[in-house]
Amino acid sequence: MKAVKFLLVGIFFGIVLVKSEAVSWYRIYEMFRFQSFHMYGIIGTAIASGILFLQIAKKGHIKSIKGADIYVPKKDNGLARYIIGGTIFGFGWALIGACPGPMYILLGTGVWSMIIVIASAVLGTFIYGLLQKKLPH
Amino acid sequence: MQFILNPWPWYVSGPLIALVMAFLLYFGKTFGMSSNLRTMCSIAGADKFSDYFKFNWKDQLWNLTVVLGAIIGGFIAVKFLSNTSGTNLNPNTVAELKNMGFQNPGATLLPNEMFSLEALSSPKTLILLIVGGILVGFGTRYAGGCTSGHAITGLSSLQKPSLIAVIGFFIGGLIMTNFILPLIF
Image (cartoon, rainbow over all chains, first blue to last red; front, side):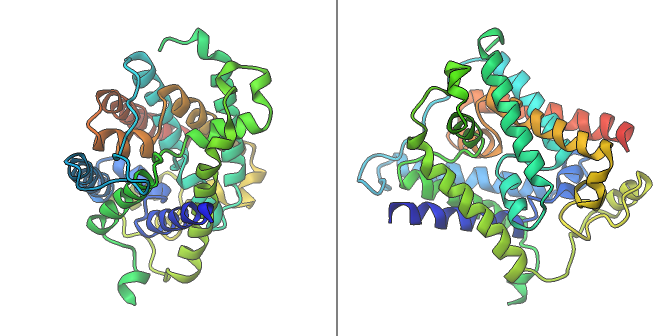
């Protein structure tokens, strides 16, 4: 039964990303050409709502299901990995118009080609795992 | 019902995405889709090749369940919650894309020229999908997160590493869309 709540969150996530058009290759293209406010509006209001939620949670008004504090893990400090890794991801994001959430959602919408993209993304992760110790972080 | 069947405006969608993050935090988890790629590698036995994949992947099964849900959600959204109204793109965007050889920009979620099954018979398309996928998988794991982990969760919690990563996302995206895509198409 524990799994059901995660399944439901996933379903909700999938529906929202399709209905928001955030899974649209065209919307990503438009965003990187600065030709529409749509994606900036989505990301901006998502972050603003997120900040609001976390600030309210921080004041102790919202606890987790187990009664613990709401906790967001801290990212490691660094520069190279974020700027280089981020840029490489950006290349891929703009090329295929899908990031690691939409890849699965688009598969659900019936885009079978996404199987190739997902398999390639798994391969890319494997390559990163092999090279991790040689890369600047 | 029309307002559900039509595409949702950004000011509805953004807060709903934050709600996904809030639900997962409430359940004691973190919103981050790209870590599933690492989990899949581990399940497939990649731990034999790199310590990066040595972790108890069973602790991540909840996140794979979110993935399964996302696939179902995508299906429900197009099957039951959509009408035939396409994406309302900027006319300039449509004109540009037509010039690049895309037939009906915005009519579907993705260009058939790249993602239809027919398009797969072209080696160029196949290479684009594979290269794109590898860049996404490599880049997100190198950067330690993607749009959900860095842009939404990281920026919502005011973390500097996530800001740097998101700047990277945009450097890469802007170069690809503005300088490389016109060379490809």
